[in-house]
Length: 440
Ligand code: 5AD
Ligand code: SF4
Image 1 (cartoon, rainbow, N blue to C red):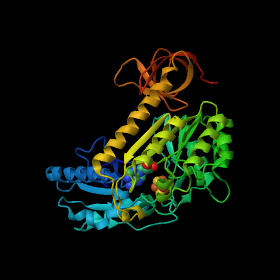
Image 2 (cartoon, rainbow, N blue to C red; image 1 turned 180 degrees about the vertical axis):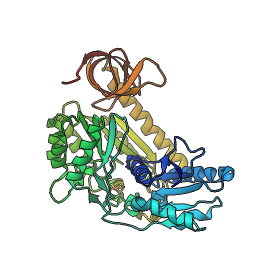
Image 3 (tube, helix red, strand yellow; image 1 turned 90 degrees about the vertical axis):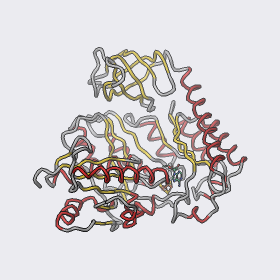
């Protein structure tokens, strides 16, 4: 491979972060070397997201910017991989800048072969073949992280009417639990203390032997692992049994990411979400009772076609009632090919932005309210890294996923400590260590 180097720029969700690590592993296995940054790399891959138009525009701008900078070395390969590659395929070549490679998420195991084809010929290489059963696992080597993602399923069968994911990522398939357990065990051997099990809809995990609750139980048994997180849950598939397991399994963190999208039954129906606002509120209330102190986070989508002021008000009401610990909030963005793209995108852009600002303001006030009573209480923190902004401080997360900082004195990365909260800001809690639980 004459020491060709590659660099992967990752946009989008956790699935892409995992996939990029997989691509890096595949390319390294084929003799390529990973470069620390894009400048000077022989192959630059952009792993892209298609969920919103803005994400796509950002990726395209970046790809063409890199393509135009290539003049220094015309042999540099620029590739677009991921969901946008799958969605737009060959048309990505029509925008002016020279793109050499377009490869969808199901093609990653054969990327070295695609790069060889590219080297041998003159034309761009496009591969967006689907592999509906395709599932791949990571054998990450030599990294020194404390936390890691483990993909347990790929694809999605839900076809929420606004969402492009089922089209670009294909149908749901679950990674066999033995492979999941192997992967987690391997990560623990490398020093990982916390895994996040990821998939578009983890609650529908089913490998033919275990369901999601069973899988949580099995992962909970992995020696040396301290914490388990998982995302994303779907309100229509999250069962009381699983909620009870989250409450009772010691390694599973008290945090559920449970996208609400809207508090209006009419919107939820048009979105094809498969639950009502009442069912969501009941589920959230059950979780709050069954898992003492659970943190609930969510996704909110404003400005869906035909959303009226009263639908929006319903969303604000449910947010207030559930009292989310955090939220990702978005304006609706029509995606061609989805069912909602056939509905008139009739909420004016300024109105979407106004509603978005309202949900953000409400969410911020919910966080501020929660945090006000935190000083003086104790939390468990897994220490993830040194603070770049404040030398002498370490950064970690509480079990409920709050970002926390604490003085470095006597504490190291990878340790789990009990700490007392001394101060709070919206995005960070400040703590002092009470007890180091190493070996606990
Ligand atoms: N427009 C805006 N937001 C979207 N999401 C998914 N599709 C769209 C879209 N077309 C949001 C949803 C989902 C999150 C991952 O992205 O809130 O839960
Ligand atoms: Fe998209 Fe709905 Fe599947 Fe989530 S559950 S990936 S929003 S279709």
